[in-house]
Image (cartoon, rainbow, N blue to C red; front, side, top):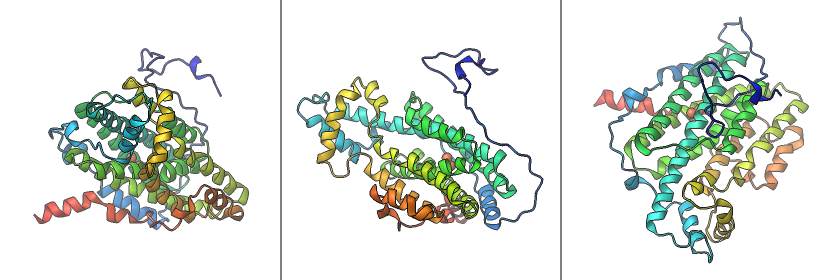
Length: 372
Ligand SMILES: [Fe+2]
Ligand SMILES: [Fe+2]
């Protein structure tokens, strides 16, 4: 790999501050192709593309940015993460032992801002991944669909950035964890890994996290924005499953093993990302000092860290991976490993790879507007 620090700055970026970098180079060895096969042969992808093109929404037409947002009024200070932090404050010697309601409210606000910031950065990663699929996937129907997804992800990035900027304030930088997870697939040369990493893993995680925030907020602008974003994401997951089902039915055992390994390496670590150090640093608490108190509190609180989101994530991920044949391939290699990690309880969770039509919030709102 070339040392990225030796490269000249991209044109258009006159200076870069190493303390607060505004960009990062991506070393991409993917094979880009020009494709001369225009026959529409994949009916389900054609249907999905048609649906996507009529369900596009607009951030300026469909969302009311004049909505006054009072974050303190709407933030949820009673969810399981907040219960855990309050419990950590009660452990003798805890660095947050002196905290009262005011500090916990500030924490809840910062946590919400941190989540929305990671959504924003993740959405840009999704836009880049979808654009990469446009150039690399060897099926015209999938190229067309990925082009609509690229537009969807641009809109998602834009609305999260605008919400932060206008309603909440200074966003957080991209977390190293999310950056690593997205770089792994942007820098991988195989086109299907872009799908497996983004449409199957990260978008399942995103749907769970967006759903969790959607349940917990009553702020009307954020609620509608999340509802529209989730409707698009449900289609993206379906796109991944449709495309990969076809490809994976033709791969050899060794090739499938590589994909199983990729899943193993890139899903279990989601469970270990327990704290949000950036938030604690902003609040003047050393996260390494706090960690043992959090661990102790986690033993007392049912569910522990991010339980609701992890449950939502694995209950989408595991059935979808099963559908791709990756649980059973190579004598159940992944079934065994995930079984040991306790993930097979999600094997029969409701299948979400085909229910994008029932999630079509844009169509629902248009019908309601037309009939009123
Ligand atoms: Fe998105
Ligand atoms: Fe997406």
